[in-house]
Length: 336
Image (cartoon, rainbow, N blue to C red):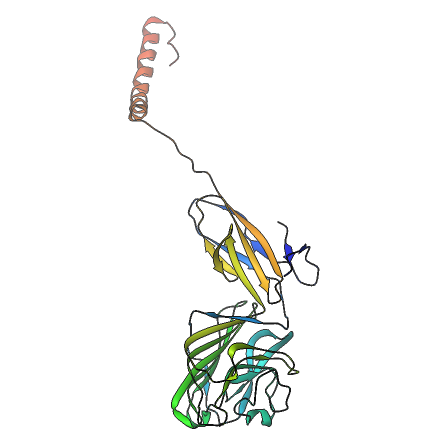
């Protein structure tokens, strides 16, 4: 099977040695309807571009290490549990800020007390967090809640997840509202997810705005959800995924699944295609064929069964008769 790299412009080129090739497996033989799991060894990509999409709401279970925080501060570093790529750089730890964001380098105190965005990102000002994930960045009052911050690593390598949760944290000056939201980092795929159970802004405090997005180390590149870059917005029961690459499985031209693995149960020999699409539009593909073995069938009539039974039952008696004739007459018995 030959792996092809397709550029966003639609031309085909052989993938260079810059990235390892994507490989789908196993090519195997099964019985009709048997279930087999297909796997993909993905192109390892650590890039500085992002795309995003809304996905079905799926708040992760809240648990792991639990702690409290003073308002307008950060804590850490904490171990991610695996190597994570963010804007083309690899990190193994993060810092958690009270105001709804994490950073992969230690924030300065000016970032801590910059409780709401001053304006849209990208922004390279000294008090703007970077490299950072905002989910969402606004003025949360962690000083009024106890044991409301959590993080843990769940799952099994190479597809573990680092789950970071703000649970029922009040808004500053609008303390009747409590927000619950998560940042989830994915191993291998480098997916980033935002899960919002309830988030809002406080319209009577400061600028009354919030940001959902990501920003690089230098503050010159950022990506945000439309309408959520230092703007007035709220969310309930939402999930969003950011990705540098996306993995989909096809049977012919029909999309059947997404992710690094999929289960299939073909009734006839079938070829499946895995497609990994990078955030710049480049795609890598590979095929895997599941061969369905032919069934062995036989047609047996009742006459066949009866004849077999009669032959089995009478054969010893016939042999005895033939032997007796030989002894009595001296004439050799016929072969039975």
